[in-house]
Image 1 (cartoon, helix red, strand yellow):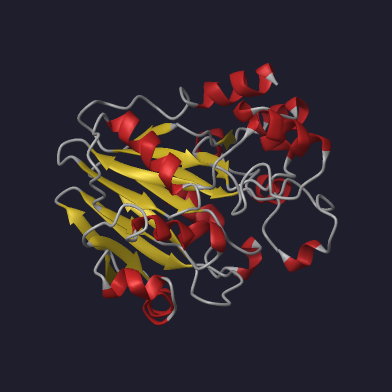
Image 2 (cartoon, helix red, strand yellow; image 1 turned 45 degrees about the vertical axis):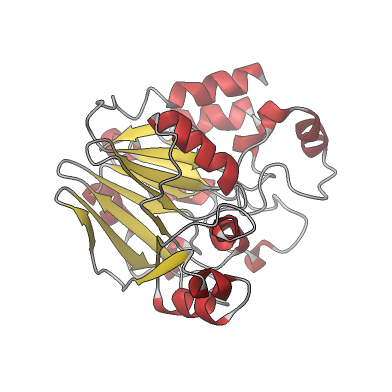
Length: 306
């Protein structure tokens, strides 16, 4: 396992130097909605991970930090939000409880349920801006316990629209864009974060790339960095039909993008790993395979300069 963490630590140096005065993205977690390991899992990996805290991974989330304005936005409020907020505070050196805003991708458990910690039972925040698409916004407004956060003004819902930019300040914008996914309760979006110098695309959840009218190769060419769905490494990974959870396999994504130049493949970091994924289990052979093909693996605590 020491090899695994040495490899993950190497990622921190691969995304470019982060200048002290420049905005950056901080990876707060890399696991699938239920975390790594998952509740009830009795695989050898899970049993070992429950004993070894270093093997555990928090749920997929990122933060956008702007040192100049002392602002910090969180993308997806996960069940691990308390620990992730502590990581954010420690990284920024800002021990205040200020959260400039939260952007939500969709209404699956790993992506919004952390909002509960903003309520009166926990932080009891005052007017934290929560950016949400129309169905996501409606779901929060009309269903308990989320509606209480709205009523008590713990959160202030901010409407999003497909491909409509949100200007955060004079040098940062965020643009949501719809992606295909299991939209039982809300739409699903990815986000394009743009600074004065660079662009980062965040797509933690999507169904097969072929279902998306947008060509992934074009998205890669137009961005400087991408954090994209790496939930499953390959077919047959879990003990149920995988068409029930039709994420693009890491192997499929690497094959789809194999024709891109090395400089474009190097922009990509896989994230949102299921506990069954060998990349998060420390499988050195699979990790080396991803690296040899020019792709990256996101790591908790990774900083990407914008």
